[in-house]
Length: 188
Image (cartoon, rainbow, N blue to C red; front, side, top):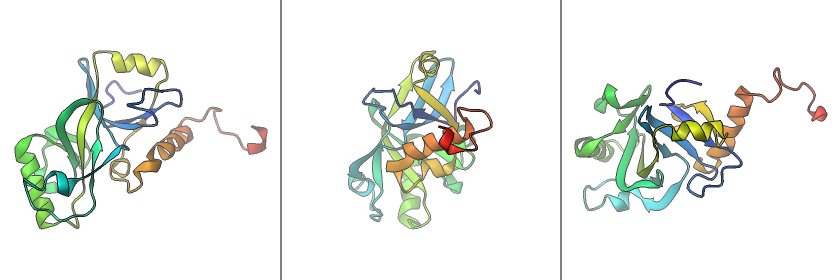
């Protein structure tokens, strides 16, 4: 396992019953000696981005929903985007994926969305998931989470409701219970 889990997915284990994280997939945005922070990728709310931001900017209604990023800082809005014009290498989470930070980034993202809504890829999250120093490491030792390198397809999937099942399947393919796999499924 890498020293830092930044740009990795945490996939909730089957025994993790915390209602905040049951069958969740979390993208880790920061992980260091002070703790970890991420956003839940598969928990959309019923609130549309266009409705929530209507008093700030007029944008086309593409049906984009705001996601519940986690149980921490519920008043904070986070945005993940892939806009080339807003590149900030300090906020690059994955190659080509950036974390919007601050009102200037939000304004630029919204302006881009208003100008070119067909080619804009972004996700907005209300709140985040957070872990104190060594808390995540304890949860990993308890097998509460499976870890998988993240890809843009995980973040921008059109079917967020099956993301957990697909991530678990991908994890199992990369980490088979029996080394070398089982050649005959009837042996199970």
